[in-house]
Image (cartoon, rainbow over all chains, first blue to last red):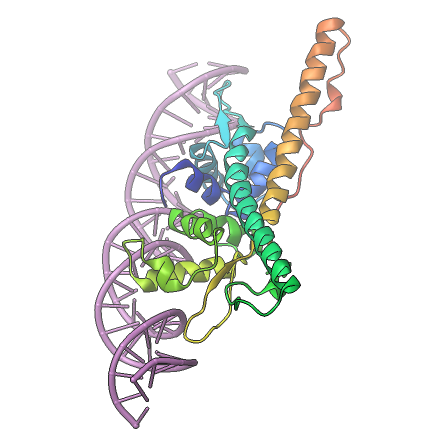
Length: 126
Length: 126
DNA sequence: CTCTTACTCAACCGATCGGTTTAAGAAAGA
DNA sequence: TCTTTCTTAAACCGATCGGTTGAGTAAGAG
């Protein structure tokens, strides 16, 4: 995997177990042992998941006696939403312009062939 | 990798090349050949990237003569932002309550009721 | 029909991933 | 100190990933 933070964050959240861990940490800090219980895997496996989340900056941990509770660092979410929103907006702006163009061509129709974008596709989710 | 769509979307965007492809498609549809040019890898490699994006629902393609232009399906972004916002909000709400609790304990410092936040509560995800 | 363009399929390769088991810290309590 | 509890490290394994090369398909253009 690439070593930039955005890649690490997306990659970390690509795993359902790690997303579930994040979901539980949104509710409150927890230790490795607590986090590991619900899953049918070893504590060591969950420890690895935690390390991935930590490397992505999504989780921080501070030693506290023997324990080392995990804390969700929600700010990193902003990195993703910023990226996502940027290109969503860009795509939407592009659609807006295309729709305007098509509308204009509808008014005075018989010029220009438009093969670059099929308006029938708009709004078709996946 | 897990086979649910959220995992596929996060996983697809965990790769910088694929994010760059998405960025370029936000600017307008493009063919495989066009997309492949800037990268120092084979056309086949880029074709694989496109397949990953297609399986995630981020890109659609329709045959058009020999070509098969790629089109960005920006609606899938909503799936991610919904997930991200949910847990960001949840974490922020939690912080808000904790701050309020600490403030209350500061005001009248011996009757604090710590049961308002139950750390054992489980949030389901994925 | 042949040639060229655009794309895909299949096999392979090294690296990484998610999991295991086994072993080794690190900190508190007896 | 010895024990117990919680966490990490190391080695290993099968599966998947990102890339390659080489051959194959689809559809104009001559």
